[in-house]
Amino acid sequence: MTIREIGWATRGACREIDPEVFFPLTQSAEHEARAKAVCERCPVLKECRAYAIREGEPEGIWGGLTVKERRGLRFPSGWRQPAAG
Image 1: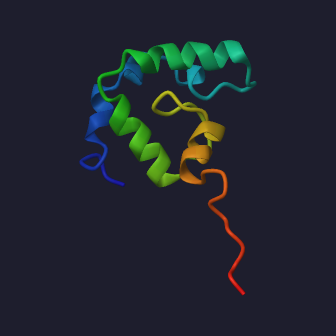
Image 2: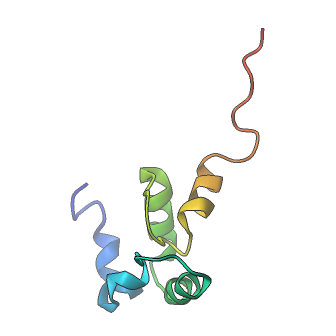
C-alpha cells in the first residue's frame, strides 16, 4: 500500500488524535465509544471503512467499526455454505 493509495488518511479526523484511542491496550465500551465518536465526524469515514474491510485490518477501530463489525461485513452470516453434493 502506498501513500497515494491511502492519501485519504491525511484528511482523517484521527490524524491528530492519540492512536491509543483507536488501538487501546485494553478493550472497553468506553474506548470503543470514544473512537467511534471521532469517526462519526470524519470526512473520510467511507474511504477508511472500505479500506479496512477490503484489507481485513485485524485490529483497532477503522471507519467507525470494530474488528468484529468489519468481519461481519466481510463474512455475513451464512456466507459459508456447505458444498453441494
